Length: 159
Image 1 (tube, helix red, strand yellow):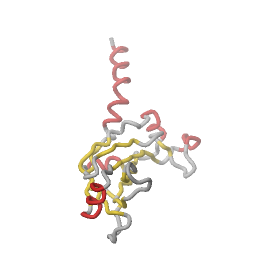
Image 2 (cartoon, one colour; image 1 turned 120 degrees about the vertical axis):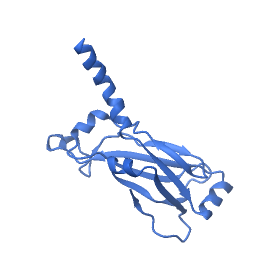
Image 3 (spheres, helix red, strand yellow; image 1 turned 90 degrees about the horizontal axis):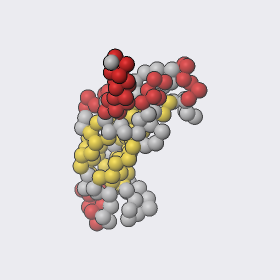
Image 4 (cartoon, helix red, strand yellow; image 1 turned 90 degrees about the vertical axis):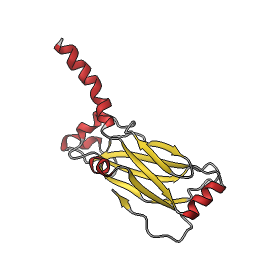
């Protein structure tokens, strides 16, 4: 019975770990960005990648900049061109790689236009780059976007 219970726990751990990597993001737009995206019937894409610093024993798994990617591919979520709230689930996190990290798992989140009506990204947005635990504490994280061509203040790193 104890073996079956520990096997069930082992199967549940990756899902629980991935759930612990999720958070909400709220995308807002300047008036000019909202008008342009609406006129072009353009969408917005929010994409996240998870990473961290390697343990000494896992340095062989580090990428070209010396970090461990714990999400082999970006998690991508498309939202309407009007902006709004979306959930980043941590669905692309390979939980086996979390054991390779010497510190906390970190996440990088960027926002761009969906490139449905224009081959180029139209947006310059705030972004997230920090420890997942810190991002989760401040969620939903507000990311404001402007048109790249628009005169606007510098975008900010969050949380």
